[in-house]
Image (cartoon, rainbow, N blue to C red; front, side, top):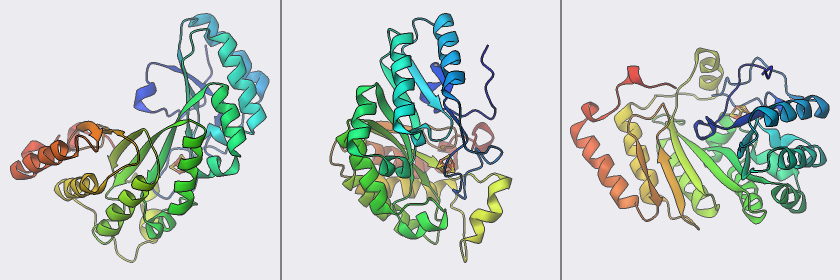
Length: 292
Ligand code: SF4
């Protein structure tokens, strides 16, 4: 019924929800580890086209209560355009409780607090946000387009507008060479920025990304699964967030699945990691069973 433009990505938590492509591609599209939208040029889809799809989906799924706006950073849309979409979603899906999207730090920095509050009032309640790392050196190497202070400012703006943040950090993104800086600076960032959800993923480079990613490093030694667990443990030990965080490491890439609330469950989670480290590879999800 809907003629989606592929590839189409959505967070695992949105698997059962309505997906509407408000934009195509990613307005940044430069992160060196990411190949998601390399085949697409960032495009704002015409409002009338998207509205027709919303009406068709509402006709088929009148009781749907959650909508995810794709593609890579629908928050890049001009505020009035996004506000119109939110109004239509509200009237089309009477049971709507959540509208979410992927967003970059740049998206939050380009909007005023009042604009963000207007979008929140329109129903935008959750943004999926890639922190990846809190290290300025690594943020520059991976071409994230912002430094850690800008990332913190973006997350504070989201908080002030009451838009929840589900953030991701990529374990192993600095290799052995940057492991200490990666984890310490990432913990520092998380301790300075109010987020609601945190997931840690493991670095996995597709062929199309490898050369450009590695070119930014003089030397890059990938971490093995056990070294990744040490990073995970260190990160948990250093996180002391300004508000409680619901933590998950249950992405397809993760060798060990963990879940809890931080900082309440930090010690329990570290003990789980210690148990796995004692057993070694045998305690981990086999590589062939995982996706990156
Ligand atoms: S902002 Fe997100 S989708 Fe865009 S290139 Fe970076 S990681 Fe990929």
